[in-house]
Amino acid sequence: MAAGPRTRRMTRRVLPGILLPFVMAAAAACGTSADPAADLAVHPDTRPAGAPFAHPGVLVGKAQLTAARDHVARKEEPWLSAYQKMSGSKYAALDYKAKPYATVECPPDTRPGQGCVEEREDAIAAYTQALLWNITGKKAHADKAVQIMDAWSGTVKRHTEGNAGLQTAWAATSWAKAAELMQYTYDGWADGDELKFQRMLRDVYLPEVQSGSADFNGNWDLLMADATMSMAVYLNDQAAFDKAVGHFRTRVPAYFYLSSDGPLPVKPAGSDIDTPAKLQTYWFGQKTFKDGLAQETCRNFKHASYSLAATSHIAETAWHQGLDLYGEVKDRLAAALEFHSKYQLGAAAPEWLCGGKVQRDMGPDTEVGLSHLRGRLKMKLPETEKLTREQRPEGTDDLFVAWETLTHAQSA
Image (cartoon, rainbow, N blue to C red; front, side, top):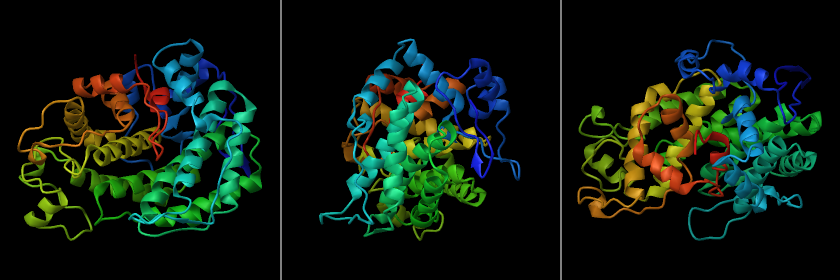
């Protein structure tokens, strides 16, 4: 799999059917070594100054692409079913038509928006087509991914209205995953078009998300950090990467509670949510705090689940870049996954939890976190494993999560 720095145009063509010995040589950089202990040993707490970014390395690494392709070729589960679900989706169609907008307007209320659904779906379609290119080797999928991205880079100028930050984060996460795969696995994306796409991310998307959103519900901040890190790796932008790491390190402890935090949750950095009364309101009226509870648990599980996915995405991308953010939050993330999986599976909510009523609407958001905590660290997460198996093959939420059983499942 040829990937790495290039002069003017990086050497990036990676044909499906990569030789396994090369993949194993790259595995340490991608977090999928045959020796988990050795794999863990090469991920420090900080990235070396000036270290190059590993590519492809936005959520999905080289060895993971190869593993997915090999599992599908051997018709192994759950990867085959995951591939079939992806290839049968509307996003996989070779006649898919992008619908770009110059201004994407996403109000936070019941007013109709403009371009919001289209942007999210087109970004997921570009990523889907990029994955299909890597699994099947069919050039038509590569061309379609590029076509979708070029349509938007030649059109979009701004995001407006109250949900602009969240919308931008959702779309940017998928755009960056798609662009990363195409930059390093396909040589048919014209230099000028690729540079135009990079400028789009730098000018239209990155400024909207990289500063985070301290006073909003925490899923905003984590989704913005996910988008920032994804774009940073694709753009080889160390400063943006560092901002995302900073947001991760302050927001994750303020979003998922552990008893070691004390009687109250951690205050969100940069916000004025700094009294017991304000924290209780911010946590949707919750007065009792136990390991794994999330800031939005009593709102609904859907938003807490977004944050589980975003947290796992950030840590996974950092892992591919040689930075072990998982190690900083593994107990917190495991507790949150187990807590929400338990009640999602149907356990009765006690009276202390959200007044005994929870909204069980988690999305396809557990695969990436489980793959590290259970797959690499061998931690026991029985509730999460059970839920993940029941949800497989995890598809897409049509927002920012897509096809993670295919790329990250560790076993059937």
